[in-house]
Length: 195
Length: 174
Figure 1 (cartoon, helix red, strand yellow):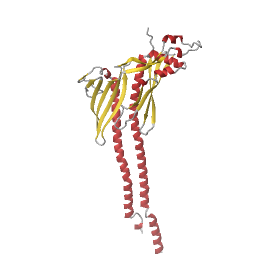
Figure 2: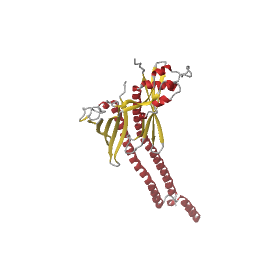
Figure 3: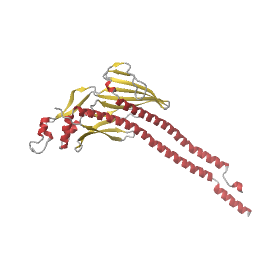
Figure 4: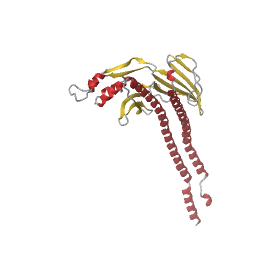
């Protein structure tokens, strides 16, 4: 009698088969999640590298090099602790080749292009002497800014101002054996401001 | 007697037969639940990566445009102060002309900040400039707001404000 209590071999085989089948989608999900995590890691590393390089670049007076046109190797500066770089300036653009930089198992190459963006603003002009009177003819007690001799906005300066506002375009490139080559670009601008 | 015992034993064995299958099915259902929860977690982690990536781009672009409006303020401070004073006297149109209506202070559908996995158009514009005055300490500060607008990966329009506040000193040029 005691021998009849328990699981039969068929039951055990079927149970194991069901469990094995139920594990298949889980293994599939885990495989895709590993790939996804690797891609996320790449993106986050590239973003952090780009951010750090851009923040460093904005602190340096690279925009002043833009006006020094010509092609050739630059001074032996180091950029954020990296190897020294070379620069070329042609027609007002400055290109800095940065890298290669190894971040874990990834190898990144970066390029920073700084270009001059001439500026011209739309400025509403007013007449300071009219502002001094500050009041409305109908009600002298009430200040009326519309009587300050405002003119419609005009473009100032008359010719766009060069060498005071620069665009920084940083591109980080890397190759991934599974997904091919990738890039990540960041753009910022820097003005020459008075302290 | 013997026949009776045999029947009872058969019934009890019949109840137990198939219980392994039931247990395996319950266990499989639990595993399926785990897999679903895990894939849900993965779905949530993906947008977070892109949020980090997007916010870095937006912040740098907005800071760049804020730098431009500071340059404008340094070049044409008198016009800003007059427009600000007019705005305080219920005439905001001159300040709007100085800030919001200046096309050079807008970057519509900017695409240079792109990537191989996310190429979206980002619009940046200077939304406001405000003078913050503390008469007690005789201090003035300028608060600049830039608004960044873009369509995210899920087709939703996202607006984000970036602020910068800097202390300023008025100088009278004689």
